Image (cartoon, rainbow, N blue to C red; front, side, top):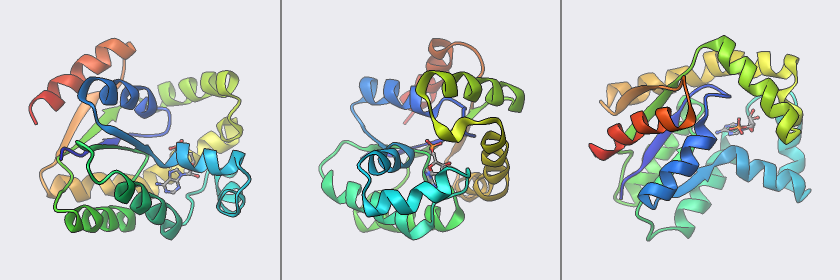
Length: 189
Ligand code: AMP
């Protein structure tokens, strides 16, 4: 199994690049944001609980997202590998993921970090808000999501740097030029 952890701030292009990666390399896309949004539109109990956090740009509690990922990994036990998008977002989630993968005799092969300047992130999220009608892309919530990313999520990069799994790639430019950089790194593993 090859498991790629696509890392980056909100608006860095993780969703867009994930889609291209799974197409080219035949991996399974696991986006906690997408799974949570599906729960929200299904108006499930989990969705109702998650909504209060998501609308404020706060993180949904670790136990909820870890449980979701655990189920998806179990369901896809024979996959060639996974692209984790928007997960893990805390050190606790990273430790839980390492354990889950170890129990399945596999591990994170690579953390690929998309590097994008903060002003560009805000610009992209504003455009996305208009296109996708996402309620968590308002100016105030965007500021909070970036703050939460810096405080709670950036330590996750340190966690995988210690394991020598981290590679940074420029997330600035066109979708295709970014994907060219992404592919170069993935081809090495
Ligand atoms: P995303 O689409 O990845 O930007 O996620 C949208 C929102 O879903 C985030 O702002 C969080 O409220 C929530 N969320 C997504 N993934 C996670 C995660 N791994 N841990 C906690 N909350 C998450």
